[in-house]
Length: 195
Image (spheres, rainbow, N blue to C red):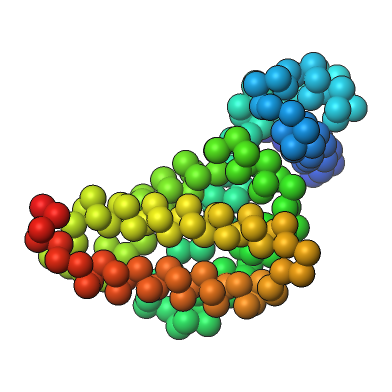
């Protein structure tokens, strides 16, 4: 975000304005192609003037970046050094956030922005480097991380649009199990043949 609040009241008002802008952009993305959305259209949809928009963001892209960052920062990363219940709790928190902000999640999926930041976060933190020391093929590992992240996002999107979805608790078990099973895939491959 581009603005820096100076007091709690200003902070609350700024947060409210940013939410109005993000909610309006979400509605517009769900209604029309992203390239047809202008700052003027966005301000009209949000019920704000352009100076309010520019007090918080420089471009529509920056609004999307802020929305995207909120999801990416909550992406659960598996830590095998922690009890499984902690990993499940992290997945549940993420799923609850996705459900609370389901329209934003779906809008970001339409723009393709969500995948990039999630992959970057997963690769930067390197989901499972410590699992296979000395035997990991970097390209194969990146492909499996990509598969896990993009598959997880697709499953969550489908979950958000289902009429009677699983509970966050149940889905967290499914996603964690699927992600952990990729270790078995990676370890069972003859990685020497991929080098």
